[in-house]
Length: 385
Ligand code: ATP
Ligand code: MG
Image 1 (cartoon, protein in one colour):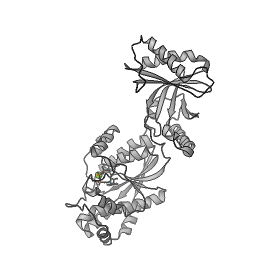
Image 2 (spheres, rainbow, N blue to C red; image 1 turned 90 degrees about the horizontal axis):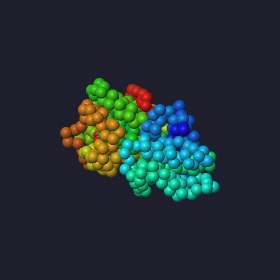
Image 3 (spheres, rainbow, N blue to C red; image 1 turned 90 degrees about the vertical axis):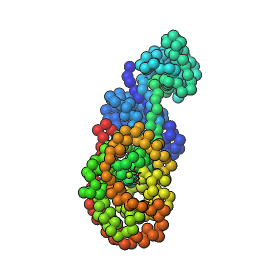
Image 4 (cartoon, protein in one colour; image 1 turned 45 degrees about the vertical axis):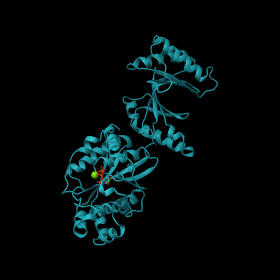
């Protein structure tokens, strides 16, 4: 009996004309991840033959996989054998509390209906386990899935995947990564919307420690388990900070620094073909994230600014950060670029005209060009991708 994995992608199924584009994106992503397995697209489901070791764990990190099954396939005339296989699936589980069998028939000429298949296989399992494992149709502990295709029968245990859209189908966006809790979580959410993030980090070296950059790399390493390898742009920011500090009102510093960041990344975006900017901002979370301040910062760029966490509470963000294994990295205490720069009494309701006036007091374009010239480019990979 040969093991197979069956991948489903319902959100893609909703997308009418885009369907085949999304399907082939998912197939080629899976082929990249599972180089030693055979990935085939058959009748709206992706079947992985001869799956390599660790293949099903990899599916848990693949955007666009709504659910997947671990099981096998039988010839049509071997219908009786699937009953024993269903019994074996149950035996491999640790104390399941309930089960259900669900069947789908693509081949309408198969002599049994889906319901008959469900009933027969369900009964075989029920009797085998001495009627002690109850059938539960809604949210069973263990879901056994049977698909009658034209050329074979698939049977597998179904489990949930990440969902979302396949990696990269939405194109590229610049992601502003600080090393804190929010921006990596924001980036994760956009990866699941098919966005390929180009990470940009502004550092204050040599005034900020090397560790701040290492933190960003570690976080990106986790994110690249989902997205595949990620590019990172490290932009030196110390000169800009010192210039802004010298020439602008203290309370506007942070807003002016953010505007500098927006303008720098717009140039990177134009060069790299990125269509938007992602930040980890959440409305009202800190003084710099009032609507007035968001507006004063966003005015510096013509690109759409995506803030997937704008409506999330810190609690929700921290919970996701923990789930993704990023919390301990983000929590490491180290001075970052902005903490070096936070004014004692930051502006909470910036007025755009005041901000624009303050910005005229220093050579913004020169600062940007200099920073871009000194920008370092790296690629971050994860060996478990
Ligand atoms: P985070 O948890 O992501 O650090 P935060 O709550 O500390 O966010 P801010 O410091 O106001 O909030 O930063 C808001 C957003 O600006 C961040 O989520 C990030 O997208 C971006 N950002 C801040 N500092 C940097 C930096 N040094 N390099 C790149 N992006 C940054
Ligand atoms: Mg921060």
